Image (tube, rainbow, N blue to C red):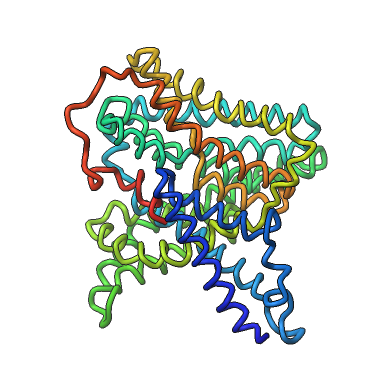
Length: 425
């Protein structure tokens, strides 16, 4: 079959299955993202393994590009767009209103799981490079499912609900900083004793120069783009200009700073989040991301894993899962306990920070692509994301006392953009 036809058929099949599984997931009260991820597992080597089918296996000629290769490129573009969208829909006001307790909740929820995961991985014989990255995967938090559960319990605008949402925003920023440092230092970590402090200093220096240049040039560039693009003839010019900035900063982050490209994309989204046009840009980009690039990325995650590979690694996996759950409960809980939260409120904040989601999946995918972690670890990380998402709603319902209710259940539009921006992906 002609490779162009292979690619068209491949994308049609994948989007169809992703949306069907996403709709089914949404009907039973789970995030749509979870269904799209499961669609990839069904289509991947765990069950069907569509890349082994004759329709997708071989290109028509040696010079042709396979459907799998094109799909992988589209998935990588999807990662950049998802993180740009996450930055664009960051609720800056929410972060400001709960900055003190939310900061400590996010910090505790990043530090404890990372150190716990790293030490556990080392005990099981992983190299320092793999161990540090495994710890990094555990830092991520996605409160999409938490926000939905809090809304059902009429607790979204409560003290703990606002703190959880604010902490999730700060957690994203801290997690990206940790990821950027780990990715930038990965070659030095892998080299072990053969690496000098000079090499590490050069790597960190490039990263700092890159970040400083983005924070220095990013905001004025954003304002200039939004000033110029309305003068252009055509539709959605502001969104097009925003995409130019997002892809340019993603390129700069990886090429100049040696960091993950998503760091630049997320920062670009944050710069636009401070502008008056951010909502219009978000509305223009959301259909394209949710209809095409998000399902392609989340399905690609499932296509890359084989759940059968968990055999023989069950002890490590369940210990890692325990650290992933306990690290957030204890780390985030202790973080807000000093901010005049009760023990129960602190526990609820910790439980609300348990779910890993888009950022956790993206982090794991970056580690696999960069060769930092093995496919087996990648598989474990994806399944860990699934389990932490599933256990959070019942734990939250158990943690909240039944007699405490907020007077009004907020409407869906009251949700912070950061909480629900990717829920419909």
